[in-house]
Image (cartoon, rainbow, N blue to C red; front, side, top):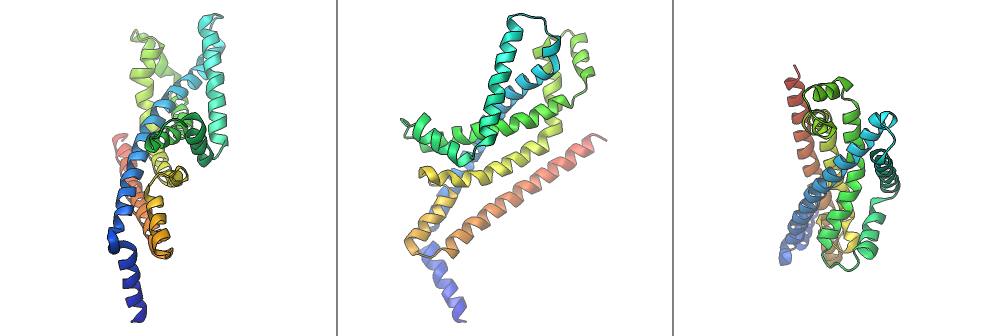
Length: 241
């Protein structure tokens, strides 16, 4: 029974003594805030970039020479550079650049993290949404024109809703990936869930218990959101029958 008593002692010292469990609770709140806000930013950026890229792929060759064609070409080039840089560099490096270079004057670490992770997520959301848009039959564009819609209205009312329905499970999985990626927020001294566990480890000099607790909390969240994604996929499949 000595191992059990030692386990009890370690549990008390890591979580109960001096209310150290609050480091994990407060960190969990920060992690969820960071993730949800980054997802919203990522979706906004991703949809915009996806519309630019898909519009270029579908219409550029047929467009007449003029100002609109030039603007679309420039926007597409900027989008491609954005996707290449963001998808080709580690998220932790992007976070550090955002904190120490781009937003060095800001003391709001949570805001910096939201923007950094949102910009990172936006690149992946853009490709997900673009694939959804490209999968929509061209007849849907013709249907929009027959209803008197211009291109933007057709995208807004007909194409984007259908594309979102097709890629919604993939977007939900991107949210789960982003949730785990935010664990590097401690690099800018943000007290997220992982940092909370590391603070406890630094105080008690016991690594197993606090880090195992952090891993377990992440696992529970991932399993919960995975369950919701699977339920969403089943509902979407049933709605198509």
